[in-house]
Image (cartoon, rainbow, N blue to C red; front, top):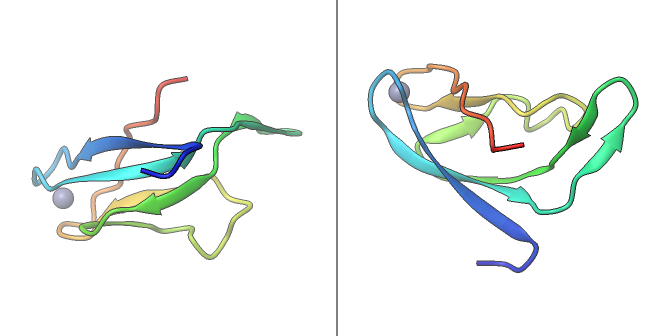
Length: 75
Ligand SMILES: [Zn+2]
């Protein structure tokens, strides 16, 4: 595991697909949004719908059934 990043296990609440997402350890503050972390990596089985839009909050979607994952990394 790369230093400065941490992985959060996720499981699709719809089909049970398991995977993980990795976040940058350092928060940054963005006006109008607040503190947030940068999504570094999404494991296979899931994808970040907004990967091409870094200004958007990451939206993690199950690749199997298309369910949006609501799990957020602990604040
Ligand atoms: Zn699913």
